[in-house]
Amino acid sequence: MLVAALGIAACGREAAPDRVVATIGFIFIGAHDDLGYNQAAWEGSEAVARAFPEIQVLRVEGVPETSAAVDALEGLISEGASVVFATSFGHRDFAYEVAERHPDVVVFHQGGVEPSPRLDNFGTYWGNVYEPVFQAGIAAGAATTTDIVGFVAAFPIPATFANVNAFTLGARSVNPDVVTSVRFTGDWCDPVLQAEFAADLLAAGADVLSQHQDCTRTILEAAEAAGAMSVGYHVDGSEVAVNGWLAGAVWTWGDTFTDMVRRSVDGTFVSSPYNGDFRGRLATGDNPFVITPFGPSVTSETAALMDAAGERFRGGATPFDGPIVDRDGTVRVPAGTAPDQAEVDAMDYFVAGVIGDVPE
Image (cartoon, rainbow, N blue to C red; front, side, top):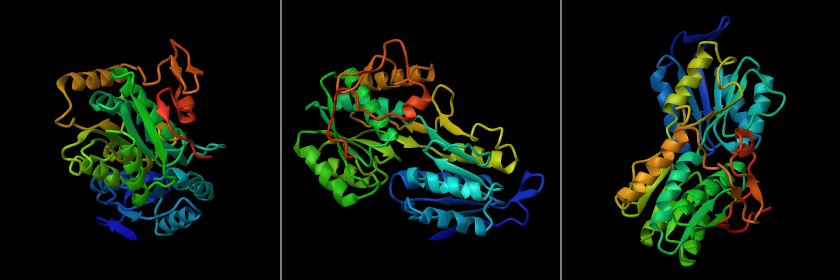
């Protein structure tokens, strides 16, 4: 579905001496109302449309992580888009291919790491999701009475390892006996399998559920129906988990997307932080990923611990400050050190306290 949002201007804003930006395009792997990843990115695109009412914003939903992404991006460019956003992890290589083909088009990719050789019209962007996820883990660790928290994930990619690890480290910082039981669906959004895995985790004793899935409703509903607690992801799902909501770690893309477009429109993309691998952080005040307001069952003591963790991250600390030991007993981050961004972006292990098989 191709949607044109707001009005089309006659001229647009100058992005380079010989180029005018009148159209911007976005592709999404899922639906704009998935109560999750795609909804958050869609809301960011709406913020762009509000900030630039003279620019046409085109959107394509349901674009899989296949060569269909190339077709969708090429279609947007044929419609006049000179700035395009590919918003799913598996869109990266296809977006890069399009960027190579169209050096006059700025191509953004959400969540990946830029391939080599680096291009002056391609950039990736993300936020340090594991900072708010660590805070949410504190809420889970304080709330569980079974010492088991369940985590439904999509794929074993670095972002998932970082999220599960941060969540577990946060939970164990207040309850060292907590284990995080992980199940992988192998799909960004499979409500049937998500419901099955949520039921399995609850039956195995988990009394808090979290997730790294694009669509979040199914797992929130499963936890709520079972009287369990919920930790949300991507967007605020407290309206679904009215009684069990602890907190959520969610995207607020509006300001980031608007700044990215502004840099592209005014011709300063190449010298901007987005020409490469942009990673917002709490310490630099530009993390588009934040913790939601806390649920009513979060005690003042737990809230204070969550707030204190946020303050540490704003001061430059990370959830992965050493010593960090993986679940096989290997020291991954020595005491007194912290991994750099490239190491986090390549994370491929689980920390002590995580259980569950990792698919090949």
